[in-house]
Image 1 (cartoon, rainbow, N blue to C red):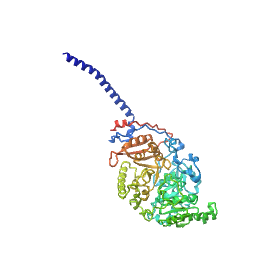
Image 2 (cartoon, helix red, strand yellow):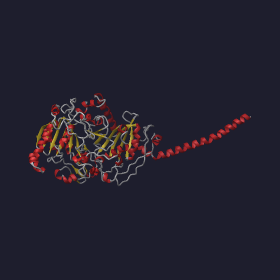
Image 3 (cartoon, helix red, strand yellow):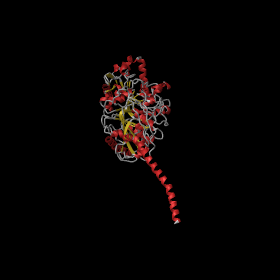
Length: 614
């Protein structure tokens, strides 16, 4: 009996110790469950924006922590903010060769972390093709050109709109008549031989807009300015354009890219500074490509009186220009009235003479200068000679448009691992992806989307898959990625180099759709996500869209930042239903400074995980 009593007493004493611990554990669990439900309930509405109600897409357990995020509004004087070409900073930089107009990006500590507002009265842009001829005044409320160039009919303000009658300094009969004359001089513009072009000093891009109707895709280039807003007008019209200037740095394009380059009284001093501006045009122009000049000193015999100069001075300028072009292996192709056309040599025979003549100027560039290096690369006063191993890069050897879009480019062999089989598979892949995107976002392929940017393309696959839709695509290749941009241009598409740790060379609200494919995964070690997404918000039009294709590891972090940008997003499966990557389909909201919107912080990942059935 005693032994039994001892056992009982020990068990009773043990149970009295266990019971409080059990009760305490139950209470703690209940409290944790209650607080967790209460906290997650506060963030439930935000999760519904990222994933559709009833979606089975869960957040992976190893995702990085989602931090609370919100961004204030920039003041109204930042409505046309271009961070790397900011007129507020121009006084810091030299005036020699207009270097102050080149890219000068703010340091990290000076970056704006606010949402760039639209002008008061901003409306959704007029849809293509009507937008080519008119736009809302309030969207680009700058009428300096209208006042100063009214006699040249670049644009005209009528009521609440700007109208673009197709005039220009050298277009007295309208841009179409001007291009008709150019086509008479260059028959290659009519048969698909010429597909890509660049217009330096583009005005409001009427030349590039007219060429679109003729199957020629043009990058219109102009520097940032205080009042004229040339590039902003171009993009508002739905015409490809980019901020840039030929100065001390190379343009962000590979060598042998464009089929044609054009200058219509762009006021670039082509023969000054050793001819470096023409040397840059030579570098980016494809062998056999054309350089077109109208304005001084062309037709100086009949025009010199209107140029505030003398006939002798203009004759001298023309002779200097002709001599310089000849030394660069250009030859006169055609000339009539105000238009002169030169053609870049399509073989290397002429360049061999440069090698054999030690006194030749400009000299041939040495082999240490990479011809495609074009991101913060100084222009050197030498001729970049096309590689002799490239036999099919010349204009006469390139398939005509549209056959060249799907023909395997010769320069794909210069890409590590690149070959014809990979190129064909890439085309099939993007055809399937584009079809899937259109199911998820029916606006793709409609007149709601005109200006598209593929922020980190490889071979321009998305642009090729959407080529029959009423849109154009700016293909961006990272300056830190494999150099695939020559392949993009060889296909008859357009694009640019860029580093997404910096701001893009465009005005705010200039793209209808941004496409991202693994950008955050590839650049996460260099670029902070919030700055990249703030830049995306700056260049995206209100009510515009973003298709973000990312690894499951990053997708919820991206969604949280997008919420801080006031975007509405939902999460979708990829066309292959891969668990390793997901899609975010986002839309930017239209807001104005006078209508303050309170941005709610995003909760932590634990709430996404707890409510993964939402």
